[in-house]
Picture (tube, rainbow, N blue to C red):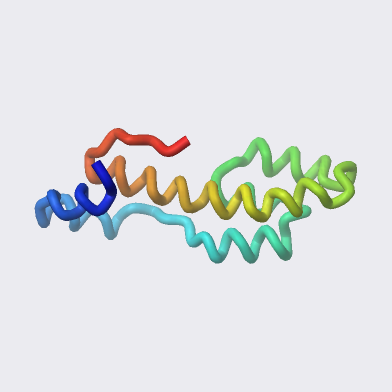
Length: 97
């Protein structure tokens, strides 16, 4: 079942809960990755505390490769988390990997 079909088959009570779902703005994640990615701020923002600490401590040893690659990974992960949160709230058990 697609996300659109889930929304169309939901009643008004289910849809009122959609406004209460905490979503991460992918554009904010992208900007954090570009400007503060070397410090792991992007990972802290999306909830990956362990990787945020590792990135903070080890990004100097990766010669800037990890923060560069993480720009795309964090952006994608924020979008997937938002999608999974919406589907979970609507009662759909599908998980994107």
